[in-house]
Image (cartoon, rainbow, N blue to C red; front, side, top):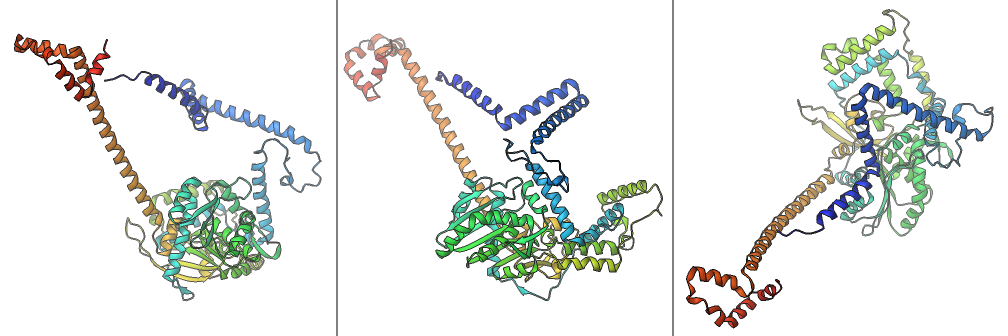
Length: 582
């Protein structure tokens, strides 16, 4: 076997360079900290290590707090014009782009909560029971919904055509891609396979700015411009969801929308409107789609485009939240379809739904409808724990002061405030509901589903159902089921796995062929070594022949030397290689 000089040295140098590069990366630094902490724990013990870590954490936070406190002294002012601490505006010229972002988010959430109380005073009537009693009723109510899911029979609405279901599934696929593709290169690859050209993509939301992830693509053959807004996938998106007080839409005080979603929609619209106007003038259809948060933003972008003269607009939303008042929701029915699946909590979540849930909790009598023996073991454990806490907090006095539930008159008074802002699901609502519950033991539910088209103010959409499916029914995969369609991503994944398997088999086959080739070369090298030992002009072989067959043929090679030379030339000029041997 031939030794390749320098290979070991080259591999060692390569490994050293890459290890230094790795330890300077964020991933390498994380691993270094983990190893270092493990070494500290091993050296000084777990309790002392935790104590030391907490002291270091407090020291870092304290030093940073002192630094910022001294830095903000230059803001000036005595705070006389501040109604609350949230009125503090952090300085813009800090030199640190990250400073003030977290404060901005927390301040916006606090202000939104305060404004929500002012704009939606009906919500103040939600906390009507003592916390232990409230928790117990929620647990029992959850058990009731789990035991017997809601079955419905809607007489209103029209059946969902198969063609519309297929069209909706097509755009649900794009909404799903916004979550699953980690890079714009991967997204571009998937879009090209379907004839789309990716124009731009923002794959991550921006902290504290209500700037969602989204992408824009064109299909020149179909003359279509597509904008897809991703739903909630990061903490940044969750902040946008929670900033939920009503604000005027497009400067119109008589139209109210969800503030966080409107901020996200406005940011995307500012970058998309000019392109949409130009492409619409060229005869392109403008399609906007999204899931959850993205669906609400898509509906608002569609309204903004309509108000700016873009006529051929279509919006497809999935798990669209109730995010605009009734007049805007009705205005969007011309070009918007919103899909709601079964018990999904996101489209159902609204002030009216919370009031309905509040009434249901207050009217619910768990001692009459639920036996503790029926509860699952985890729920029984939680119930026992809550009762212990309630007993401890009341000092063992079961007849202590308890908050009385509101009267019927108080509840009706609370509902009057809904006239000010009672958000609805935009557009025509494709509602997939459970006609009959079928839950085989140990298997996925096989409910009998019905798909119908209704309006966003339908009473079937105005309540919250406390059950597992209120979360399970929210994902994009669940919405393919809601439409009765298969997710094309599954077939794509199977095809990718098949291609990867074929590629690995080809690599394995190539490696095996390479190993055989190395064996052949190794055998040839050994043959060359044997030929080298024979000496020049085959003298070694002649001597060996003399030893085995006698000396009668001793002169024959010399007499036929010219023939020997000719034979060696026919065998690849081996005489030349012999001449190179000293």
